[in-house]
Length: 250
View 1 (cartoon, rainbow, N blue to C red):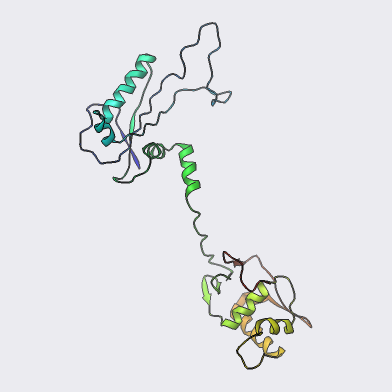
View 2 (view 1 turned 30 degrees about the horizontal axis):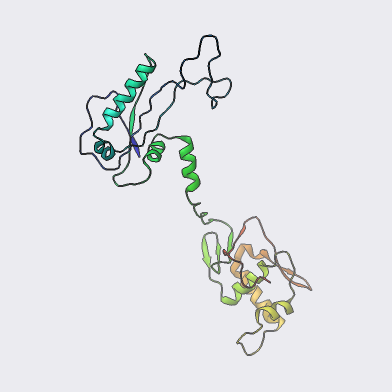
């Protein structure tokens, strides 16, 4: 969206202009009839104390096709509004600009005008209506993405096996709690198609391989002597969750 200055008006708008352009004609006019000399001037309620109103902007949503259908054009409408301001308050200053939009852009004409003229309220509403962009992928540290079943370290994906990720996720979901080896076996290998469940030594091997792939961040999986293993969150570790709880949260 952009602006095109049409003040002063030197010629009427041609009959064939891009469809759906919107016009704005900011023209100052008095807010109320002159007050009697014996009374205080009426203040505009929106003007805070310590400030004074110096004019106002009137946003006009009107495209060229609609003006032509009404037997007029944008230039004639602007001239009429400027003349009205001069008639009501001789010597009043006016300035007019037209707001341009890409042909076929659609939308409400007056909203197009307000955005093109950087109206604060319209800009705020536009920002609120825009979806929040996804957070950029961190380039440093560890991202444990529960929703996608992956681990990213310093921007690079880590190739964990299915069992390694399941083990890490199991500990992450119980952050700060020490989990003993029998509980890990009972939970992760219960109902498994494998012929027999691993022993506690096998769990140690899985943990050692997992920590090796975590590299300099291996200490997020801590060994608690005589007890088991625990996941400790660090400042450089981020957890990404799915939109719904993971089915193994229990």
